Every structure is written in C-alpha cells, then in structure tokens.
Length: 433
Ligand code: AMO
Image 1 (cartoon, helix red, strand yellow):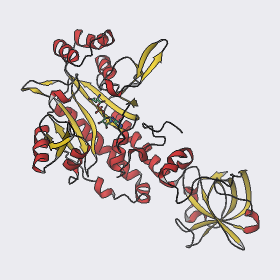
Image 2 (tube, protein in one colour):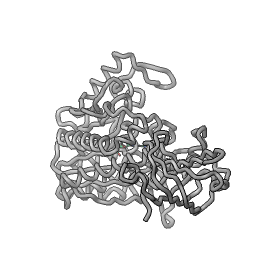
Image 3 (cartoon, protein in one colour):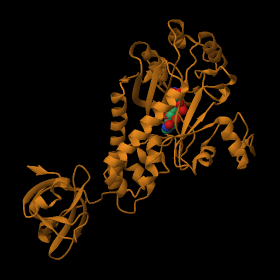
Image 4 (tube, helix red, strand yellow):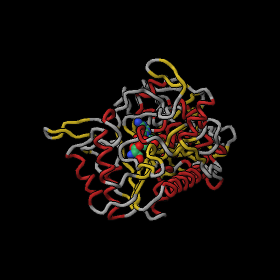
C-alpha cells in the first residue's frame, strides 16, 4: 500500500515502514548519504535519506517508489519528518537536461508550462483554483439554481464583433462563443434561475495583464429579478466563496505568502454610480488619451484598467459601479426608465486596484427597444431571430451577470499577471503548450 506524504507527516508514523511514490524535486548528494526531496502527486514534499551509493544515477524529476522508515528530525525541511529509505524503485529516470530550475525566466516557464505546472507555486495556485470552482458551484446548488451547458460554437456576437474568433464551419462560418448569456436567457423560461461555467473566447488584440483569449466564464441569469437582487446574488456568491476558499486553502495561501486578512470582512460591497466614478477620477486629475493626446476623463468614456485601478486601490471591499451610459454598454442592457441615457447595468470592481471582475444587469425585454438597439449596432440578421423570439413569446423582466474566473483569482491571489492563474494560458502570442 502506498501512502500520500500528507498522511505520514504525523507522530503516528514515527518508526513505521511506509511506501510512497513521487518525483525527485531536489537532490543533494553527500559523501555518505543523499538527501532527496520527494514530491508526491498532490505536490507535498518530504525528505528521503538514502546511502549515497544507491542514488548515483538519480536525476531531478525522476519518478520513483520509496520504501523506508519514518523519522522525526527537526533538520528535515517542511515539518521535520524524513524517511530513511531502504528499497528504491525507479519508474522513469528523467533525462539530465530538465529545462527548469530555480532561476528560470518567466518566458521559459511559459514555454515549458507543461512542466512548470509541477512547480510548487503552480500546484498551490491550481489547488486554490479548484477549491474556488467547487465553492462557486456549491453556492448555486445550495441556492437552487440549475446548471446548464451552453454551446461553444455559435453564430451570434454578444460582446462586439472586434473580439470574435471566426471559424470555417462546413463551408459556412461560425464563431467561438464570447459569452453564454443569450443561451442562458433562453433557458430561464423553463428552468428559472440558471448558471453555467464554460470557456469564453475573445480575440483580444491588446496585451494586458488582465486579458486572456480564452477564459473560464461563470454566467448566471434569472427571470423576475431587479438590479438590486442581482447585486445581492453577486455579493453573496463571491463573499461566501472567498471565505470558504481561504479557510480550506490556508496552507496554500501561506505558501504563496498571501495575507488573507485582506480577503476577510469584504462585505458589504460598496457602490457608486458611473457618474460618481467619473467625478472622483476628475478630482484626481485622471486623464485619458483622446485622438492621440491626453485630456481629462469625461462622462461617456469607458473606464479602463488605469481608471479602475485608481477607483479601487484604497478600497478593502469590492465596488459596484452602476448606471452606465447606454452608449458604452452592449445592445442587450435595459434602459433605465428614469433616465433614457443610462442602462440598468453594473460592473463589479475588485479592491486593491484589481478592477473589473463581473459585468451584468437587467436585459432589455421589450422587442421594439431591443430591435432598435441591435439595428444601431448593426446586428440585424437572421442569426438573431431566435433571440428576438424570446421577446416575442412571453418576454419577462430578467437579468444576469458574467464573472471571469481568472479575474477573480487574480484578485484573491494578489497576482499582477492573469496568466499566473491558469495552467495553460491562451493569449495573442501563446497557443502552445
Ligand atoms: P464581459 O465582456 O464584461 O460581459 O465579460 C464578463 C466578465 O468576464 C471577464 N472577462 C475576461 N477575463 C479574462 N480575459 C478576457 N479577455 C475577459 N473578458 C471578459 C471579466 C468580465 O467582467 N455577457 C456579458 C456579461 C453579462 O452582462 O451577463 C459579458 O460577457 O471578469
């Protein structure tokens, strides 16, 4: 029987013989003894001591099976346990030219991502990512929302033509989905509140620290909701998930030296209108580049990365920005009946400068209004007739939101580059491995 390393690092095992399997993480050969740091399939490590003659040919990343007796020795790294090895099985002797080491450059780590995911840092991140997905799913199960699986191959644009990936589809064309939103909207008529977790694709031409060309998108949609209801759902979902993840992954956060007190007591989320955000930015003398030269930000400008950074860097809690001008929001956003210039939409900005992590709001449920907005955006085509049918046959007030999993991770991991939050990042310049 083989043990996992986390199981044998306790006093019950001292003096007992165990078998473990894993990879050689580090190796230090001395005259009499060699000290291996063995890493198992869960990324945990333990020191193994062998007489040096047994380890002559061993190399970094060789996969081995170890039999030996557990000892407590405070000199042993990571908890003071070690195994004094007797038997040694070699599954595969790793080639001596293992390309990664302690001082490998960021570029090379991306080039060899299929191996870099074995680093302990990446293992910790992957475990946090997995817990995050689990607790998000738990929230929806607990609150009685149905999970659905939307198509990825589609004919419709949701978030604008400039970031669509177009492909050949049996001598016709199709797009990779930018958002499942329109399909979720269709499903609320028979399932009520629904949600999905699927990849979304954006042909982002800009290289930024927060854009991927493929990201994991959690989307939710519900009939009969108000904007206030949607904000409450997001606040509840995100705060309970973050709180569960930091509890479950305490060790991983510690390893990554992340101060989780910055992720505690994050409710209530704060709120400001888009107009208030613009006023705040103008008071701080924030400028945007317009036709090649800087000018003060104005009502009607998009809030970009730098603006969001300035708005959130001194906040401990996430901030909802509401009441965006309709002209900077997509066709489906519902007009505010009290102000025809603005939409009933909200973005959620993560604190400490991280910026947008969700976007959502109420959808235009009136057929004439929606058709007019789609015409203005040049979206009139037979490909959207099915979507308009949702307004023709029993339209109801409804709304939802989309949450970027990597954006959420980027905040809770306090990592600048979104590529660090995903095992195999896809960007303008990277599709392999
Ligand atoms: P939006 O385009 O704002 O809205 O996307 C929703 C959320 O998805 C994340 N996101 C991204 N993450 C990584 N890389 C990207 N290139 C990227 N683009 C977006 C962000 C963002 O807040 N259908 C609407 C949402 C809705 O109204 O329901 C939509 O897709 O976290």
